[in-house]
Amino acid sequence: MDYKMIRLEQTEGIAVITLDYAPTLNALDMNMSLELEDALKKAETDPDVKIVVITGAGRAFCGGGDIRYMKAHCEEPDFAKESMGPLAKKLSEIVLYIKKMSKIVICAVAGAAAGGGANLAFGCDFIFAADNAKFLQAFVGIGLCPDTGGVYMLPRMIGTHRAFDMFVTGRPVDAKEAFRIGLIKEVTTKEDLLTKTMDFAKKLTKGPTLAYRNMKKLMFESMYKDFETFMAAEEIYLGQCSSSEDFKEGITAFLEKRPADFKGK
Image 1 (cartoon, rainbow, N blue to C red):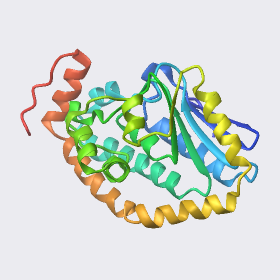
Image 2: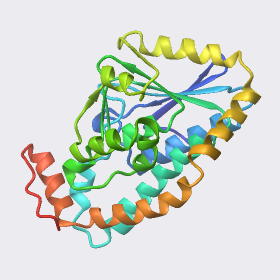
Image 3: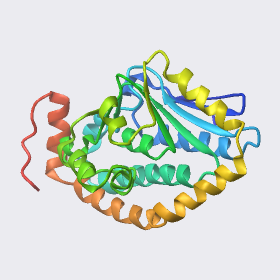
């Protein structure tokens, strides 16, 4: 596959996948998702790759979904079924794939990681964050429930009350708070982010990769065994939300930079 929205590079046993599509702040649309999935599969099957790093180019790690695309197509009668449903399914498949990969996946976040972008980061095994990073469960602002496995993963990472607060309020969690509550491994400057991440990745390449693989398998068995069952429910509930009047009002208000007038229907 020829990549137009991401970059895949390899150095010293580390595959570096960079989300790189500035016009949408690296939004996770279907094209980006398919490229990301392909890159992850190449890294997983490449015997020379021992560790995977995911990062983002530009002002944000990932702005979440492409709101302008949603606005342009949300009035189509099969939008929820033909667009939002397949995308949500693909994103959940990607996070599930990361969880089941034999190789450790590290995420390096600078700027915003919003919506599905935040949940993509949470699906990785470690997160390094620049001091300007912020994590947002931004779905509530446009009348959606979370996708990309967020409701499954986040409570397991930081507890149910903290996770539900992030879902319901959509408030940004900065790097300092994210470190305090256990979301991320380390906070560094934006300038040092990739260097710190790669130094850690290089250290891991020298370790017992067989043991790492089995540790990941055991983590999956203990924490994520029912993730695949959960994804089916996520697809249903996201479909209900993405066909609602609140969703249409939410994305319109977002683009018009005004408060949304939700009606609960």
